[in-house]
Image 1: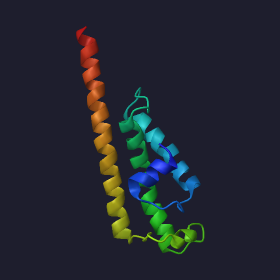
Image 2: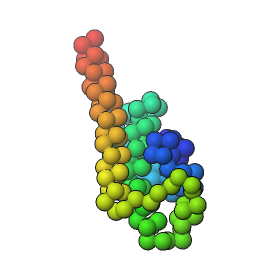
Image 3: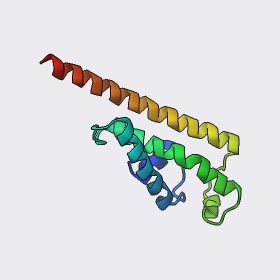
Image 4: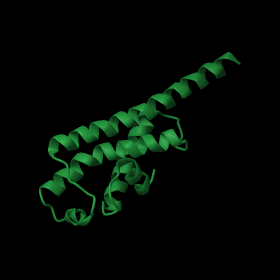
Length: 122
């Protein structure tokens, strides 16, 4: 769960400011901990869930600022393959990111439940 992993999952260019991604990763870690208390974020599914949650919260903000021409993220326009999304596309992308996070969380919750059943049976 690094800015680089968020970029890999989303296809965002390196010009997306690391500080922006890091702030959303912090929020995503707290969301993950609330959803799955006691689950360490050490597995690949946990790290990907956190990365997808960060992307889901950042996508609408990133594209809204970029579309409004805010200087804070205007430098993103220099990326060769970067295309800003419309508000509808940004919301759809955020939903996609949230869905991917939910898949990871569901797998982790299933493993957590299976482990609890196993422990109860021994």
